[in-house]
Length: 459
Image 1 (cartoon, rainbow, N blue to C red):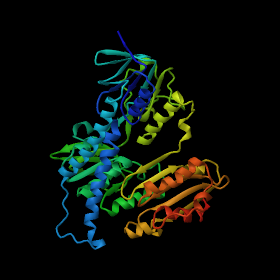
Image 2: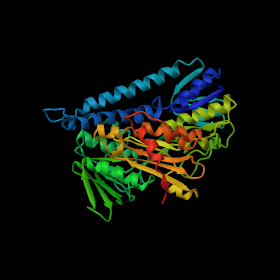
Image 3: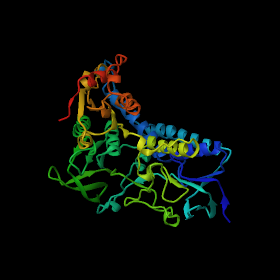
Image 4: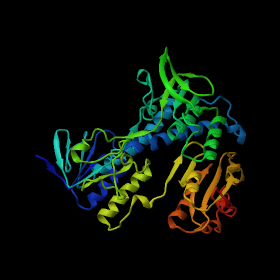
């Protein structure tokens, strides 16, 4: 006999708890099911803990640079990794506890801890019980992808979650994967004091981004002592005594890298494979992402998919926006859509990259007449004051509509300053609104008018 609910939410990532809160306010009897950690990836093994580590790594980096600012530190800098991990866990744990208390405090919501599987389009099984509802929301997230590399299963490799369990400093960390996760861990562990080698099979790091952005990021990492190998495919792994060996196929450099630890960071895969989706008739694509329309509905009436599992975005902010889209359509009479939002994300190395809208390649392929403005961070007073002048600001503009098409700010506060341009994109105002504005000095954002006042045709 099934227990009847008005709604069921599977998973408690960024979209799930907020949706549960809205359903609760609407007076809908709701079951929330979580098989692992309340709060999902971001709170427990993603944004919150990793950015806490980034902050500790920056503190170590700035301590070593103290003499540049006239600050004298007599003894060599030592990083206590146990204290670094304890700080990270405290911050992450607070977030987890807050989300848990929030869900448990909702009047119309029942929290089930267990693994949910579909039995039919309106029925889910968990812990031997059957739950039935006319509305079911899937918010199960994603996990680290494991590539098919010979010997990988014979070495005790790390993924982004297991990295957070380390309370010691690896001697030599080899990272397979030169995108966001790999680069952030690479810089932070180099700053903690480890030797770091990043192996990327494609010709550049963060290959989906512009070539100049990728090259500048590489230069930042290499300047801090991170070894970068591109055009290097990982073809085998093996354990050799207490060392891990990564064999690579590359036209440059050694054919194998020997280190103490291996982090595999080559992307993520959705947690859709063990939900019994076939029993509900819910379709997935060739990569396992749940197929949804522009309002996040599956082809099965009454079933939605939100967050990383739907392939519409792989970020906390896009997951939260998924909740907003679903809630607006269900309760507010507001036909919000996924296609309404612009691509935006950050790479949280130091200095960070803020990225919005089109890349140069996408702008060229769009058929538009495109203008570009670019300035080095060496021209930014805030960057010079901090002696952190790596990076640049670049903005792409539609020459006909004068709307901003995309931008990258790699540099001090780039992840914050980029929102000036993002807001203008959503407002669909001409770039002149920003180019004629008066910004506060000395800030990073104050250079945006200068960049926009010096646009040239994109070559």
